[in-house]
Image (cartoon, rainbow, N blue to C red; front, top):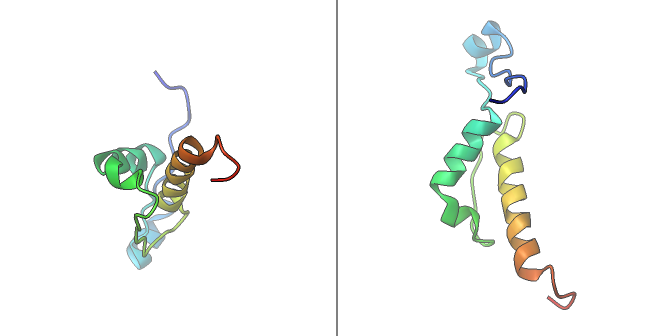
Length: 79
């Protein structure tokens, strides 16, 4: 059982009404990217995030791609 504080997904009711703003929690972002894991492991894959908000999707994409680069090319300075 996790003792971490749940992420706040709604800043305010007014922001939801005015802008449709609902933030996506990290666990949901990870679960969504796990569904397309093969694409997230391809360095040349591109993702469009038109409403990045706090950047949860962009951060997860970058972290996954950097892990792939480190595994593939981290052993050789030439690569």
